[in-house]
Amino acid sequence: MLLKSPLNDIHKEFRAKFKEFAGFEMPIQFSSIKDEHLTVRKTVGLFDVSHMSNVWITGKDAEKLLTLTTLEDASKIKDGMSQYTAILREDGTIIDDTIFMHLGEKYMIIPNAGMSDKVTEWLNKKSDEHNICATAENVSRDYVILAIQGPKSRDTLQKLIDVDLKKVGFFACRFINISDVECIISHTGYTGELGFELQINNLEKAKKLFYKILEAGREFDIKPIGLGARDTLRIEKCFLLAGNEFEGGRTPLEAIMSWVIDWDHDFIGKDSLLIQKEMGDYYRLTCLECIDKGIPRHGCEVQNEGKKIGIVSSGTLSPCLNKGLAMAYVHPEFREKDRILDVIIRGKQVKAKVVKPPFVKKDWYKQN
Amino acid sequence: MTKEIRDDLKYTDAHEWLKIIDNTAIIGITDYAQSELTDIVFAELPEVGKELIKGDELCVVESVKSVSEIYAPISGKVVRINEKLEDTPEMINESPYDDGWLVELEIKNKRELEDLLDAGSYKKRI
Image (tube, rainbow over all chains, first blue to last red; front, side, top):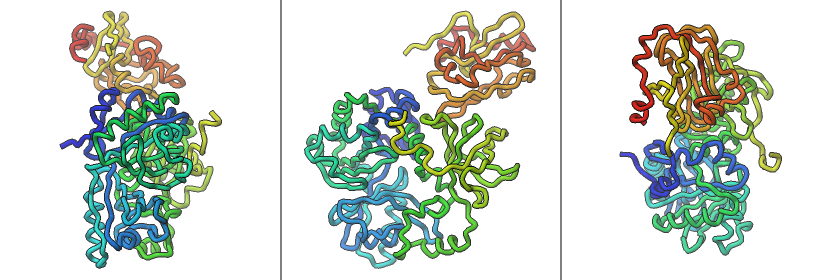
C-alpha cells in the first residue's frame, strides 16, 4: 500500500505532481524543479518531508546506545544540540545516515524514508546484546516534518515565534511553540542554505502551520517545494542520499564521511573501518563537473582512457551552474582535483572534471 | 489546464506530433508532453542522414530529473534536425509546435501515415 503524507491534500491543492518515494506518495514538483530550486537558493521554500522517519531513544543509557551504534560519541553532544552521523553494520557498511537530536533526557533520530523499522529493530537488538538500558521507538507515523530552507527562512519563521531565532545556532535543537503549535525545531537542513526543520506530532495543527508559514513568507515569494528540487539542491552541495550513495553497501570512508567519524570511541563497525583505512585501496565518492554537454545519471560508468574506473551514484543538471554534475565512486588513483575523466552517457564519452565539494559554494545567491 | 492541439497536425499515442509536407514529416512533442516533462534541459538529436525504422529511438529529451526517449513514429531518413535545441532546449517547452520542433524525416513508407491520429482522436486520449 502506498503511504501518504498527512499533508497530501494540501499538496494536491497546490497542484503537485506526485511520485512514489520509498513507499510514500510524495510531491516531486509543484511549479517546476528549476524554479523551485532557485527559489530556495534565492529566498525561501517550504518542504514537507514527512516520509522521513522519527525514532525516540529513551532510557537511562540512551546516550550509550547512540555512542555504540553511531560514528559519534554522543556524550560530546550537549543537550539542545543535534549531530549528523551514520549507523553501521559490523562490516563497516552504512545501514543509514541520520541526524540525532539531544532533547533533555531523550534523543530523537531521523532515519531516512522507509528505514524506520530497520533502524528501530537494529538499535533494540544492539541494546539487548550489550545490556544497555535504552529503547528505540518508531513514532514516524505520528509526525509531520517540515523544512523551511533558504536565505529568508529565518525571517519567515521569526514572524511566528517569540524566541529570537538567531539564538538557535547551527545544529541547535529545542522544543518550541510556533503560532500555538508545539514542535521540535532544529537549525538543520538538506539544501546547504540557512534553514530549519520542524517535527510536529499534531497532524491537524501541522496542516494549519503549513499555511501559516506560507503566509508569513509571502513577502519573500515563498513556495512549496517538491522532492525533485530537494534532490538537485542536495547534489549541488554534495550531500548524500542513502538510496543512491549507500546502494550495495558503502562505508563512511568510501562515502567521504571521515569528518563525522569520532575515532576516539568504540562503535559497531569501527574495526572494519580501521582495516579499510589501512588498506587504503577503496573507491571514494568524487565530485565531477561536466565540461561537455550532457547530464550524468545514477549508474553511468566513469572511465579513464577507455577503462572503467568508477560509477555515478547521483547525477543531475545543476540549475545554478547549468552544468551536468555527478557524485561518483572513483578508484583512488584517478580522483585528484582537476583531473579530466569521461562519464559514459548513452554510449558517448562526456568529459568531466574532478572538483572539490561542494559544487555550489556558500551564499551563491549573493553573487548571482 | 487545457493543452493546445493543432488541427493541421497528425499525432501519436506517445504524444508526438507530425507535420506532413509532401514527402517529409517534421516531428516534435505535443504541448501536453512538454508540460508533463517540464524544464527540458537537454535534447540529444540523431545525425542527419540516419535511417530509422518506425519504433527506433529518434532522440532523447531530458528534464532536470528524468530522461525520456522519443521513438520514430514512422520510418524514414533524417534530413534535418533542430540545431537550435543544442543551446536552447527550453524551446521545446516554450514553443512545442513551432521553434521547439525536433527532427525532419523523409518519409519512407506512406502507408505508415494511416496509423497516425488526427487532432480529434488525440484530444480524446489526453
